[in-house]
Length: 469
Image 1 (cartoon, rainbow, N blue to C red):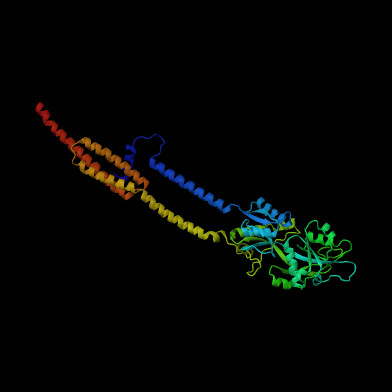
Image 2 (cartoon, rainbow, N blue to C red):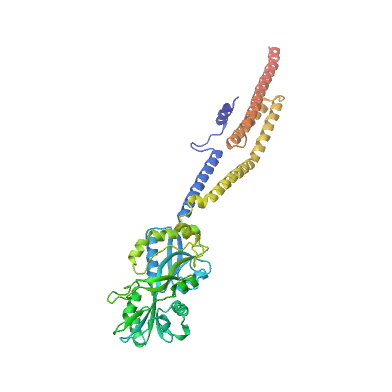
């Protein structure tokens, strides 16, 4: 009897089931397949979401209503509108010093800060948002006697500083010290960036300092306001700009072109030397390189839009990637600037290979566990095979046809269980072949024994009938 015949006989001998009802072992296989498919789909969906989910970064910027706040808010709106990978959530602070403190405390991920303030620890540059120029001018009347023409002449004078931040006062001290003027020899009066035109009327001031972009409206308005009433503005050139830049790496020497703050009359009437510094978007060192690179790429993809929207206050520039830069560039931003951004495979190849190795190990472990879980089935099937061999021996000795029928019924159950084990993978085809041989021998033994017993019964009945006749 072949394996196919055993399957056919098993199907015929099974108890009837309702139409369309699958066998228990087949139902288990279906459930396992469905579970595997669902797990795979869930893994793919989860991985896709994880790879494409937007990253939300908090950025500290201030003071309120300043141009920096407007620029950052516009950038955040564009990122959100265009569904960019990196999204920004502005956190308004009192100024750049407060922004730096929030980054240092870890309450924000990014901050817009002045390059000449004390930097937070581990702060690294993503981009510069604008360049600022220090503009220093003196007020002289119609008489040229005693006119202030040089910074060295500011000793003992009263200087108005536009902007309430202490950073502007510190900048003035750097300029005075490098020019040979003791900072304590001058009197400083600070004004807000709005409403100073009225405030300066009650102050007798000799000079002013304003800090901002070259085309800053605040600086231009301050020059106009302070020169009303026939006063003449003399712009003071900083001859020691190069020395300051060498001594303080956060500063650079620069030039203010003639006519930057007015054409009639030209203010200044000739180019003047000064120092510059930038406002930076900085991030904590712990920000991932992939996120920092994506943020830098997004910023410069919308640079033209931002600079056209804020022509006077926004000029996005890439960070300085030199190793000796005053503010080191974040590795992710530096990779974008230097064209060394890692591709998806470069970044995740180790994880991919690790995952493949883990899946291979899990497959091997799964196969071992599957074999371990089927151990009971194999043991049971081995016991059933031994039982079949015992019945083979018993069938050749029994004297009862009823016992043969009972053993035959038991053999059918053993065959059914064996076929189920084979379908579930608990036993291999070689074991099934061995069982087929034993089962065939059992059927032959039962058939031979039945024939023998029936012949004996017939022979015993003939003498009895002859005697009666």
